Image (tube, rainbow, N blue to C red; front, side):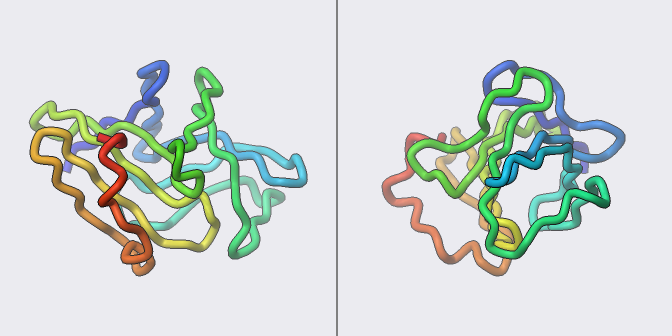
Length: 133
């Protein structure tokens, strides 16, 4: 599957060498880059060896280009990036900012359809989240 990810603010391309590249800041101020799999539901990450995350830790996630905070307001435990699929459709991808929480959502603005990925994805109700489209 072809992926093309971008920042919802600057529209800059954040897919580098087959990984989504994001800037992350921990509550204690530590920061660095993380690389995520572009495949929704694949939770493999690559980061610097000294950037250690603890399960349940809430992370701040930013665009590495414009430094826009990717938090999805008002749902502050999800971050938002854009995905252009192989047909050219622009979809919204939401994913948890809680380390170790496996939940990702692919939102299609045309059909208003939500596809859920991850073992924790059932923990969220989209009834009042139409603004994310």
